[in-house]
Image (cartoon, rainbow, N blue to C red; front, side, top):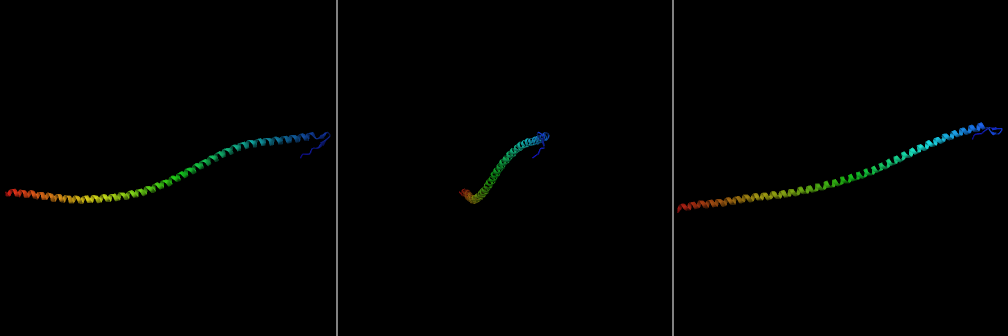
Length: 143
């Protein structure tokens, strides 16, 4: 606290005026500093809102990325299951085809044997017929 010297009519006016001027300048400096801090505060609040919005967007991106990852993982699992089923079905189909091929081969072999037997019988029948025809020629010659 400032002390003033006394004069005939009270305090020394020059000292009081100097004190008031000094106090006024300090007040104006503080007021200007306060206004500058208010402007800076407003600017910082704006930046804070901007960063909050970015953080919110980043959070959404993280959620979407996480959901995408989960969807991809589910798709991979489903693809693995489909491939496993396809392999099982392929094995079954190949086995069925091999069994059917074996049956077909056996049937073809049986047909080949039947054909050989049929050819022999036809040959034998034709030979018998040829013999009969030759025998007929001999019969006519003797008459």
